[in-house]
Image (cartoon, rainbow, N blue to C red; front, top):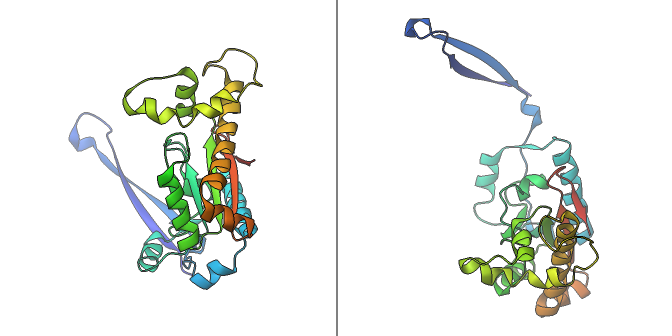
Length: 243
């Protein structure tokens, strides 16, 4: 396969005198063999997947992310191919935190996964409806609730922050704070062990709430049509730890 060459022109100032400016050219070689022209998943291919297949795919993608070996994708091709339909493998509920780029964390491209985001990755009616759509209507095989270390919403809940609509939002996380009694030390966000405990309990609470409050999802889970899993993203390493 032919290789494509990309020329980047950078202008470096050598002195205050404009005549002294020089254009420096650097040629970077891009191996087209490394760019994946990935077919968008078809309905039949989606149907053939098991929940375990999808979970293993996410775990393998995270290994590539941690190893700085993300797949080089032809996004323009994927945009065109996915314009008329979508058959994603999973739905991931994540926090809104900008440091958790969900598709990259699992090395997934356009059309691979649904992503729902809300500060503190908690469950409400809108999120449940989105999960029901992703699985019952659109065929996704896995629900993954993804919390993360050093979560600002968790910090705010522990510290009892009050500000506008944030106060009401944090009520969804308080149950996880209240049941987190193992960590020693101060009951504040400065206690990293307490924060970690609340992060995990918040994910577990979300998993329980999904099964309790959605008869559609709980029935699909009991039949083995989907799996419902939790995980925590480590901000320091990029590793996703499945619970």
